[in-house]
Image 1 (cartoon, helix red, strand yellow):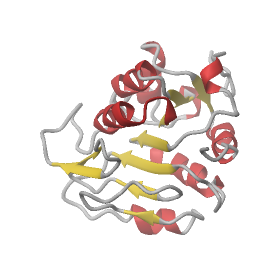
Image 2 (cartoon, rainbow, N blue to C red):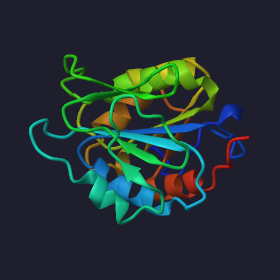
Image 3 (cartoon, rainbow, N blue to C red):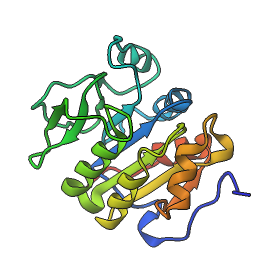
Length: 205
């Protein structure tokens, strides 16, 4: 059984490591954890944040409004071509893959669903890994499929860091469990521990 605050012992996931971008993915049960994580971020939090959640493509999203009430950082649903700004939370719009371009701007795509999802967590994680490399932290939360596991493996292959929610703290444990079983995690945290560590990240140099 996983220890809720267990951490794999890897130097690249040291508490002193700084990141330029934090990407977060979740599905069923992930919104509740995002409320915990975003609510813990201080106004001085420096990295940019990009979030993908699985939502119905034909329904309006109220995540920006909901998260803005809990988060000290500006929360936005970006347009294609917008710069990925430090200290700002970027939420993928329903029905669009959200990607990172090489010039660190946002791309939005209506390409086919990946792992039955658009937006796809894998798509965001893989594109971010190619641009940010070791300056990327990727976080995978509760969800009912395996979207995100392959993306986390790409993040680690490019030198970035991967955090995964403990399956026993997830209302839908399939997503974090798939990542762990595929060796795609550096650290495994419950939401409260994850929130504390995220809020304590140092500013990029």
